[in-house]
Length: 153
Image (cartoon, rainbow, N blue to C red):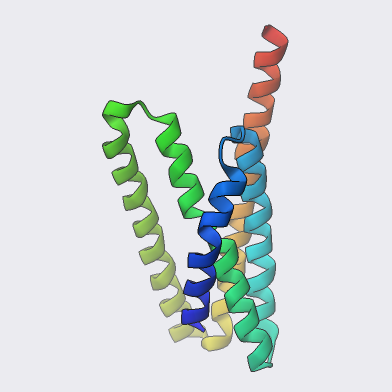
């Protein structure tokens, strides 16, 4: 399953990058909301299914969706950062991403240990729900600031 997740990521990341390339931030953030919502649904379904075939297909789909997350967001950070500060900004972004992964894995291990394996996917889905809310708020704020800039011109 993890191999299929990685395969989905590797195959999809360049496609997501091409699709989102040179798009306005509001467009990319809007797609981030959709991707996060789709991850929420896929992980919920993966936790609810008893079919091995469905589970593995969902893991591949999850990898495809993840290909549109970190690489795309890191490219936004890179584009928004002056050249002389890109290394620091990308290093910081990568550190935050790795830290979030460690926290997520730790939370999963603790939840699984205390509540059993059946708690893992609801926890992941809940974290995607939180992520979706944050992404939605960021997207709405970006759209609002773009509308104000246009009306001020």
